[in-house]
Length: 265
Ligand code: ADP
Image (cartoon, rainbow, N blue to C red; front, side):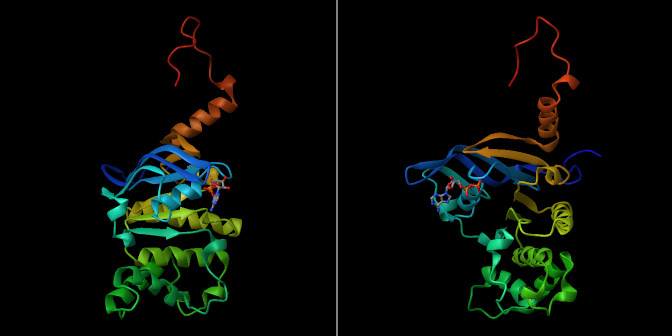
């Protein structure tokens, strides 16, 4: 089976997210340095890197929660400073930070909250809002559970509710930060399958921060490795060929003598 996600199509002419020479420091500590990144419409990008590599900081910059120390960020071609259309970007945080499990909202109520980004907090919800919330719940397979309290659902189901909440806002892109941390491992597989389907069927652009590289290999189209900067950004297929070549050098014959030493990247 080929690695990556060959069925979805990427429109390279449309940049959803663009970072140009972005740096960020917390006080004296430089956490990101000269990050260049372009995510195109329809892409499914996995962002990997060790603890403290700067992945969450990068996501917070894209979401406008942190302002870069230097460099440019553009969303849908607009400078982030003047970008207003935040419902075009759905965000699903780590389960652990998602919400207080005792918060007394039903599944449907939680998903309807995703409509306030479009309507404003004090507007009445319309028929259209309710229809879109239903559609979002159907897409994640939780419409039958709409009346249950979120706190009563399993960790995996709760994460699907948060995807539905993001979908209800009608986003073009979904950004997820380690969404399966704290979710039962069997359920994580279903969760990734759902993301892949949303990417293929709705052509949703997906950006997923994950440490689960093996699973991502069968889902994402591209991988970006972060360690203060993005030192690698290629197709998943190339990434795994490179990793395999490094781990098993004897499977890959050395260059014929005379050509050694040239041409490497
Ligand atoms: P990752 O998501 O890859 O684990 P983070 O972006 O969370 O990395 O963190 C990158 C670095 O920035 C780490 O060294 C972390 O300790 C530091 N850091 C993160 N948040 C803060 C903060 N609010 N204040 C100061 N330092 C922080």
